[in-house]
Image 1 (cartoon, rainbow over the protein chains, first blue to last red):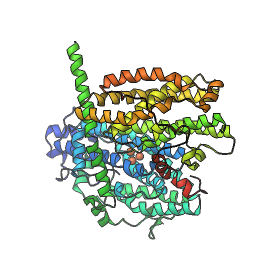
Image 2 (image 1 turned 30 degrees about the vertical axis):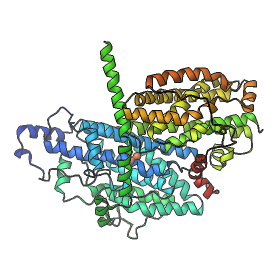
Image 3 (image 1 turned 90 degrees about the vertical axis):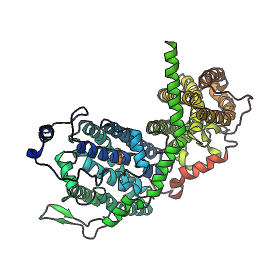
Image 4 (image 1 turned 135 degrees about the vertical axis):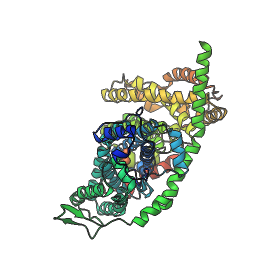
Length: 330
Length: 251
Ligand SMILES: [Fe+2]
Ligand SMILES: [Fe+2]
Ligand SMILES: [Fe+2]
């Protein structure tokens, strides 16, 4: 999940009978499975929560280019290089769709970018972890894109039209990302001793950070309850995490890799795997900016933005000159 | 001289491979999201073209190598790319100026190759030409936009042009490999493309308000492999690292 700990109004969900007629009509439309479009009336809390959520998701796509970009220039074959380039290009495209969806709510891409660069807005904790070997490109596709899909597939049915439509486009590409990641893992797991070592090491390092992607348990969160009532969040964090574990364990077995959790076992009664929680204190440190690569990621984004200022200004100035010349000619 | 057809195919493949790699170095840090997408797209096209050319080179060579073996297991002296494409990225202006100068030559050269007597070459050229026409549209537009943008963007683009212009001449040098290709009607004489390139360049630079450097000095040694720049070796240490460190692995 690329949006974590999104704050909503914090006031808890209002009962229908406590709402004024406008808000009540809005909620009833959502309850009936209807879509909210940019021109429709919406509660301020709905708009603000969505901006936080879509913005954080967009930022995650953008920062998410960096850990994979780290290996594009070292990809081991021409085909792997091409696939990875195509994937990272997709992620930039996802960022673009999502910023466009956020813009329909009245916030500009520049504003969101400034909020990311100043540290006011966050991106997913997962992108603060380093990619150390080629197997990490496998693990990221398999686990990180895999976890993202868990969250994004239900969001195709989210109540906000532009967000739901962006998700439909994104989900098509994400499943390709996951497959190519699994394919890399497969090659590594079936490869030489060194490759198997890389594959297991990548799983060891990415397992718990992937579980953290869903965020801590939110079964008692007033923020999540409101977001779920508005259908901008479709499942609890625990539901999605469980689904992810249930899906991933057999895949790891298929690869012949061991999930680094002694407590992991099938629970017949529940019909699910039991598993260990990640270290949530690490998660909160990462959110505070103390992830292993947090400083580098933010520095890289800031440098890109600052170094690119003259380009953006230059192209803008040229477009204005062209417009003026055209006007003068008319 | 080794088989001139093999040499020629390595030249085509190595240009695309080396420039594709350089462009891919921009991943995630371009000046705007749209540029990230466009640069990744250009790199992707070029890596795809490199694969086609180098696979054909390996087939022609008949020594049991493939495109990956050529890309990842040759050392600097075996590379046959133009010096222009191995030049470092510099700022975004230098990257786009390098792209523009190469695209303008590449487009004209590929267009001529679509008439090659070797149908395999004509087919690769045809496919590449579509992609490269788009690259040139975009790089020319960017050179114009930034050349005729702000004072700073203009200054940076002029600096980039001054820095890279001495690498233009090598694209139009004709040597014994070219002579063999011309004789076999496989590829055009590079010299025959110079006039068209010059007039197109003059057109774009005029619109960009940039001044073409005087003098016709040109660095050489890339396409012959006689003397690459120091930059190529560093690129290869990164690009070839996994294949070199784990020679028994398949990926
Ligand atoms: Fe994505
Ligand atoms: Fe992603
Ligand atoms: Fe993805």
